[in-house]
Image: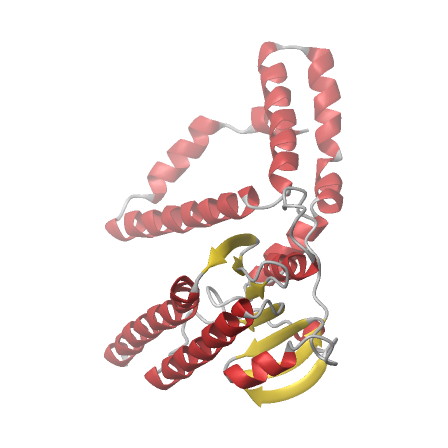
Length: 295
């Protein structure tokens, strides 16, 4: 089916049609913008796909498509028949095989990069975020020195209410003392994760999805697997303190950075939280000025 569709396209006619559409400067500008947007979306999609397990599956599908096209061009009838029929069921197969990845893409559509593109974040919120980061860094430093295990999740644009509801609701200010008290061994809330939304601890003892990354070191325990797992299904950040080694780790976008000290943890959090807020503020101000000029 794929090779037949490829052969049916009259590429010369398509090129002629496209050239006629570019008869005015406005049409040229529109075409450039169109191509730039599509190129950017394809680029982001390729980056996203390469970060997940679907990359190897996608490469297999691309190989089948390529073989079907080459077989058709060379006149290999049996090969063309076989691979064309395989491609007939490819759409259904992709939905089944890539179901977790498709869900992840749809969830990412609701992140800050799209729905909050026009948001305007003021300096007050930046100050609050910086204060929260400092409390987290101080708490992690103390717990690291005392070999107290901890798992702290910071919610960003993707809401993770389904995981918040698995824990004990708190809605308390983020302070070093409270974070340390929550993770004291053998206390009711020390197991599970603390989830922070904006400048509040919304819940403690939360259950998180565990990563099934086969390349993860076997020496990493449930906290690290939970911290990685939640960043694979959302855009949140997870900070993990190992109970065995006292080492601090940072998880984001399904990746894990280990052996952080206070300074490197602070830089990682500020880079991921405050810098993004500032960029949104700049974009929001520019768009706001443009709207006023138009009005």
